[in-house]
Length: 385
Image (cartoon, rainbow, N blue to C red):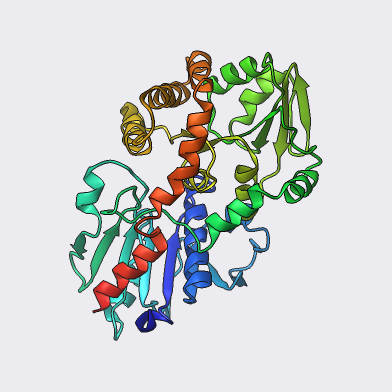
C-alpha cells in the first residue's frame, strides 16, 4: 500500500460501556499502528477506564505515547485550538465530534476522510448502509458510515496480523498455559475438568447455570473477570469475592480474575474450553479464540437486542448440523432472557464435539475477505483515488 504508507489517523472515542467502546478503538489503533505502520492519535474522554485495559497508560497525563500510539485526553470543553486533523478522522460509535474539530477538518488544505465507525451488527440492513456517504449540512465535508459485520458486503471484524497462528501455537503449548494460570495462582488445567470463562452483565441465568455446575459429574473451574456478573456468582457461592480470590461449592470452583490488559484477556479465552462473553470487544475476541462461546448481548428496550442476536446466530449457525444449531440458539436465548438456562445447557452439552469443531473452523470463514483493518484501509484508499 505505497500510497498510504504514512497515512495518519485520528480516532475519537467516548467511553460508554467502560471497556467495550474503548476496547475496540484501542485494538483498531494498535492494528493501524503496528500492522500498517501508520501514525495514530487516539482521543479518549475517560483515561481512567482506558487504563484498566492498558496498564502502561497514565490516567493523569493529558498526552502520552503508549505502545507507539499518541494518546490524548479529550476534555469535554476543549477548544481544540490549533488542532490539525489527520488524513483520516474516525468518530467511534457515533461519538459527536466537537464543532471546532469539524471546522478544522473543513478548513484543512487537504480535507480528511471522515469515518463514522459503527457498532457491530449482523442484521441485513447493515449491508445497504455500509460505506454510505453523508454530506455535512453546513460544511464542505462528507462522512462515511463503516459497519463491522459478518459478510463480504460489510466491514468485517477486527483481527491483527498473525493472531490466528499465534493462538494456535498457544493452544498447543501446555507449558505456556500452565505458566499463565500460575500468574493468577490457579492450578494447571486437568484433562477431566471443564475450564470456563464467564464475562457477562448481571444475569439470573448465570445463577441457574452455576448452581447446576455445582452438581456436575466433572470438575468445573469458572474464571470470572471482575465485573457485573460477580454479584450472581457470589449469590451462588454464598460469600463476597474479589479479584485474586476463589471459592468452591460441590464440583464448581470459581476464580475471580483481576481486570487485565487485552492480550492477557485473549490468553484467557484461548485457554478455556467455553467462553461466555458480553458486549462487542470480548464477543469478537471469543470468535478468534476458536472455542465455543455464548454471547450476552447488551440489553435494549423492546428486546431489540434479541433481533441482533438472532441475526448473528443466522450467520454463525450456517454449516452446522440442525441439532447443534437448535441447541445453540436455545441456549443463547435462555442466557439473554435470563431464565431456562439449565434445560438449554443440558441439550447443548450433547452437541459439544460438533460445537467445538464449528468453533475451530469459524475464524477462517470470517477472514476469507480480510479483516476490518484491511477493509478499512482499502476503503480509505478508494476515497483517495
